[in-house]
Length: 241
Image (cartoon, rainbow, N blue to C red; front, side):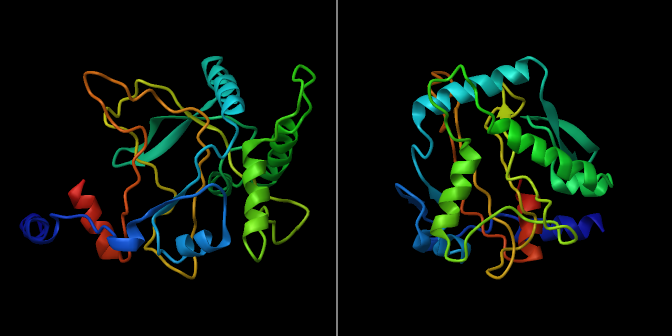
């Protein structure tokens, strides 16, 4: 068996399944647009980048506040699945609830829905120390997505009780230096690409690391046109990395 996989890797494991041409494009736009979302969902482009989506000054202030909450011990460590089981990562999350899939596995669905409501109310609570109320970044994205997508967009509802809804996302903080010297790879969907079903992710970056490292300069953010379209592609990715 070991000899078989060795031959398999030598013959087929030398390259990643990457998109080329228009489907590998990272679209840079000033706002969310229907035609760009269609291209993204049909895998006719790799990603959609909107610079300055959230006001820069507000992003810096809010990012600093969230980072301080991590320093104060208010965050939970994000666990990742490895060959050794669940291990601590360099990612921390803030919020009253955890991910939905974790709640399902722990059979704590009722608690999850209660804490989702608490989380959203807390993020939208008026703060009298600020001269003007700034919209929560995830709320801004959901509103603009609802306007841009013809069928609208909203929070997923509990099929048994539509008055209960899932969370729209949580703050994640990665404090450097981390164990990953060349950066951190993030993926939300572990399935072959499909134009009829699946997930897409939206990340709103409030703060980014300083890339001006004289000893080891690197890009702040890299987006790879990885095109995993079959289970075999997943195997190729695994043996390449």
